[in-house]
Image (tube, rainbow, N blue to C red; front, side, top):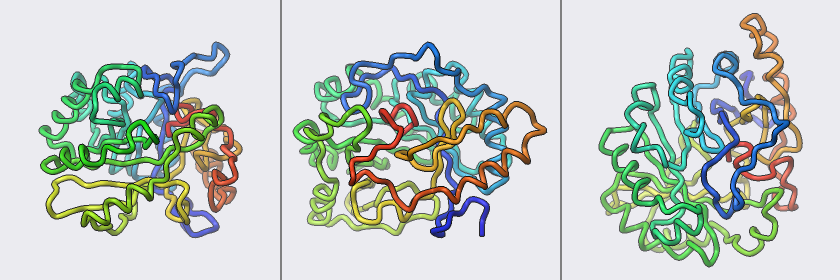
Amino acid sequence: MSPLADRYGRRFPYLRLSIIPACNFRCTYCLPHGYHADANAAAPLSLDEITRLLRGFTELGMHKLRITGGEPSVRRDLTDILRTAAAVPGVTKLAMTTNGTLLSRHLHEWMDAGLNAINVSVDTLDRACFAHITGHDRLDDILHGVNMALDAGLASVKLNAVLLRDVNDKELPSWLDYLRDKRVGVRFIELMQTGDNVAFFRDHHVRAEVLEEQLLTRGWQLLPRAADAGPAREYRHPDYAGRIGIIAPYSKDFCAGCNRLRVTATGDLRLCLFGEFGIPLRPLLQSDDQRDDLVRAIGGQIGRKEQGHFLHEGRTGITPHLASTGG
């Protein structure tokens, strides 16, 4: 069995690493009151600690890395982190998820550092609705950054849109117009319940399958899932340059294709976004001499991964909001 394989036969070549919990947006579904730092919280992992962490994971077979937050561009040494991560032997794909506020300013710097894939949070193409959801009137600037990424030839450019009932769930026609001639993937993500959004979830949750049915009636076709792909069911249409992905965590067998692990900004391994516990790896990141202990610690935890999440039961684990573990 692969060192990064669990008792259900799933393999985990994909790591999502949060580098900072802070975010400069106030999204209604995540941090509606903005980010408030905990004065007693530990500092995020240092560059040296991140390097040791990634070397340990690649020794176990990880090859796809996604940098997340909070908002990763809030961290001032983001470019150094990207450059260091890209140089770790075994990392073949370096991606990042961002709200895009600094994309147009730093895109080429990030690409030069080794970034080859990016997901940008764009919940709507309507400027007023975007400002309502995020607390910032930045849609035009963010879409300009997306266009720059496409023009620069970044290997993968995707947009993430969280579906919200009675807010942005009727915008498929606008998205189809956008995708007709743009080689970008749009990921429609079903709203998930977290520890502090129960009332919001009740008011705004809409099943992603509703949108999926609309795509099928319009002639979109489901594509086979790539081995290291994320959880989206991806659709294409011959008349459109772009593609559409559906992320439906409440759908049947959603967790059967899970292929990623998560590490928080302070170094806790999370086997599931909605897991009940974290495994502190930071004590094993203080010296290069600890590599063997780190590898054994990571490999020894995989067997504790559950077959699925418990969202259907209203159990959200220790995730208070998505910014806390990088979504």
